[in-house]
Length: 84
Image (cartoon, rainbow, N blue to C red; front, top):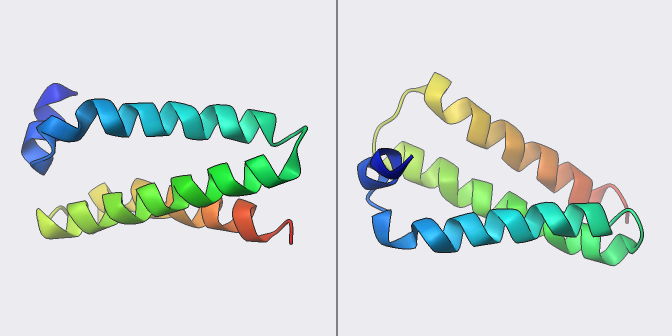
């Protein structure tokens, strides 16, 4: 995984990204109880995945390599906006 972050040019942000992902996951779980926290967490994860798609495009990954980040972005955006 460290090699992937180096390939992305984001080695110094590895801990930050991991922490944000864990917080987003916990926020989704808490969102079952407190809806607004789930909305905020899924919105944050959608933004994180949007940035991930941008990085994939910047380093010229194939569409197949970019697809998982794009799918998770759409899923989290749906979760964030579907509860309004």
